Image 1 (cartoon, one colour):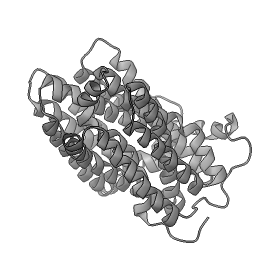
Image 2: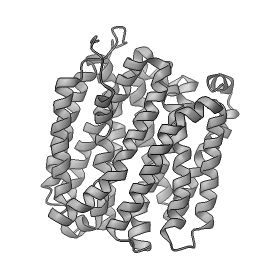
Image 3: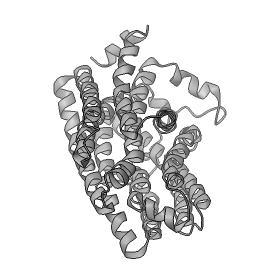
Length: 394
C-alpha cells in the first residue's frame, strides 16, 4: 500500500465512467435505431447488456483487486473501456454495438471495484459510509449533464459523436490513473488461493449484515435501472416529449438526486440509521402509490413527480447500506465490494427484466420496484439473523 494520500476526486473520476456510458446516449436511442436499421427495443437493450456485463464482471474484478492490487485493475479496466467505446463509435450494426457495450461494462466494472475498495482502504469502515454517499452524489451529476451533452452532440454531429466523447474521456481518466492513483491495497489483504473459488466468497455470503444491506442496495439499483429503461419510452413515445425536453426532465431528476445524496449523511446522523432507513422505504412506498394514482394523467410531471420522491428515498438507502455492507471486510474489501456490485448490477437487471416480461405497463413495473425495499425489510425482520442486523442499525 502506498503512503501517498489518494485525492478523493480520483475515485470520483473512476465511478463516473459507468453512468457516463449509460446516460449520454439515451436521447439518441431513436436515432441509433433508425441509423442501424434496428428495432427500438434492441437499442434499448444496450443499457441492460452494459449493466449485466458490469455485474458479472464483479466475480473476477473483486478477487483481482485483492490478489494483484487496485491500480493494475484500474489500468486494465480503463483500457477495456476505451476499446469498447472506440468499437461503439464505429459500429456498423446493432450486434457490434451490443458487443461494444459488453466491453464497456466489463471495463466500468473494474473501475467501480477499484473505487469502492480504494475508498474502503483509505477511509476505513466508519468514514467510508459518508464517502460512499458523496460518491453517489457525484455520480448523480452525470445523469444531470450527460443527456444534455448527448442531445447536443447528436444534433451537431450524429449519434457516434457520443462515443467519440466517451473515448476521449477514457483517455483522460487513464492518464489520471497512471499519474495520480497509487496502490491502496492493505498489506494484510487476504489474497491467497484460487482467483475464483467458493471459499473466497463463502464467508462474505454467510454474513447476514452483508446480505441484508446488499439486498437493499440491489433493490434500490433495480428502481434506477427500471427508471432509466422505461423513461425514454414513457416520456418521448407515450407523452411525445422531444429529446431535449427528455434531457431536461432527466437532468432535473439527477439534480434532485445530487441534493439528496449530499444531505443524506447529515439526516442519517440526526435520525440514526434505523429510523432513517424506515423513513426512506416509507417514502418509496408513498411514491409507488402516487405513480399508480397518477398513471392516467398524460403529463410528464405525473410520471416524474413520484420518481423525484422515490429517488430521494433510494439515495438514503445507498447512504445507509453502502458502507454498512462492507464494514466487516477490511481484509477482503475488493471481493466484498465486487459481490455487492454483482448484486446491484446483475441481480437488479434480472429483477427488472423479469418484471418487464409481465403484461403490465412500465409505470406499473416501476411502482412494484419501489415497494420491494419495504418488502425486503419486513421479510428480514422474520429471519433469525435479524438481531444482528438490528444491532448494526442502532
